[in-house]
Image 1 (cartoon, rainbow, N blue to C red):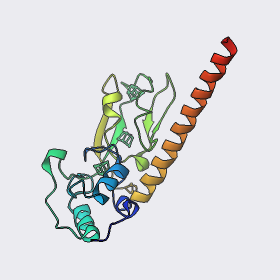
Image 2: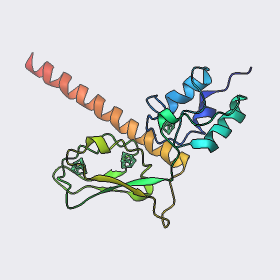
Image 3: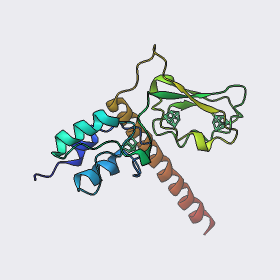
Length: 177
Ligand code: SF4
Ligand code: SF4
Ligand code: SF4
């Protein structure tokens, strides 16, 4: 069988980075699929439509969605209760697409059209004021390409900040020596 480039597989994945497939994100799951190390029914956000696409691309039989990873569901988006938010900013780092706006000690809010409903921000909130709501009909859901672009930008910013922190630490150490 001809190997399939993981990039072609990744292009089909929803790009929520939710980790429900058991991998650290969509790209690692695509890599495992390309290497024949993963089943093609592990992604609840993609559901049956994705399984059909993967089966066609990989020339493998379709399988029912693995219920251990969750079930297929209509899209939802996060909403922050303004009466309860304490502005701690802990929800910002986990969001893979930077869909949460706010700064320390300020009310935070979600950019509705960017949210993928991945739920990664929920456990970060110490006052449980982030809730998932049904996706509003008036707002278009973000595309896979939109999600990937925002995730790549998020990762680039995270890596830049890490490099800056490492440089600041090195500068501090050298100033003390
Ligand atoms: S969207 Fe699918 S492939 Fe991507 S991390 Fe979530 S479960 Fe895994
Ligand atoms: S706001 Fe929360 S649910 Fe929406 S994309 Fe960001 S982390 Fe995921
Ligand atoms: S983690 Fe919760 S309380 Fe803290 S800023 Fe985010 S929504 Fe507000």
